[in-house]
Image 1 (cartoon, rainbow, N blue to C red):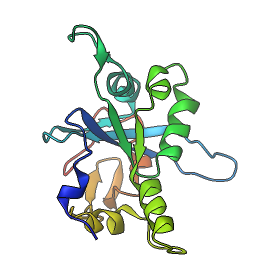
Image 2: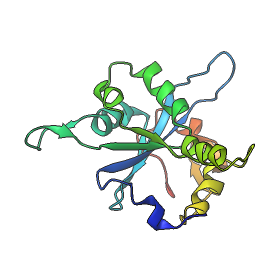
Image 3: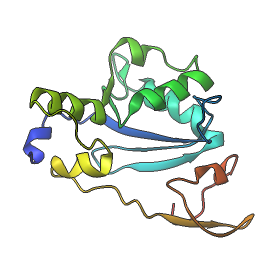
Length: 175
């Protein structure tokens, strides 16, 4: 399936967003966001620790005051399994930029892939980003990301351990 030509619907004013949260469980289904990362088609990228998450969400979802007339900074806000990210955002920052919801800016790679599977008559299939991205000619995300922290001995896989960085002013390298 697919090559980059099939992704031509991607806007130049798009942004990909992912959040990492505290541990999810039945009693805490929308845990607090411990960091947010984003990237744009032109190569900009950031990982924002807890203290800056609200400002980052306002910037991503908001209006660019430098444009005339004022317009949304991003007309496409991409997630993978976005309903979870958005539920956590709404739980902790319910007042942030509701116009992004009203204008239908959100797109989700996992749900779009599932719709493709259904349209192709597939009963099920892999929906993880590591499987979806290569089907569209994009590299799979690196799942082996290690970092250290002076208050937590050892090396930690930060793709599943972002709770270690809750409240941190900065996330240590390699992040």
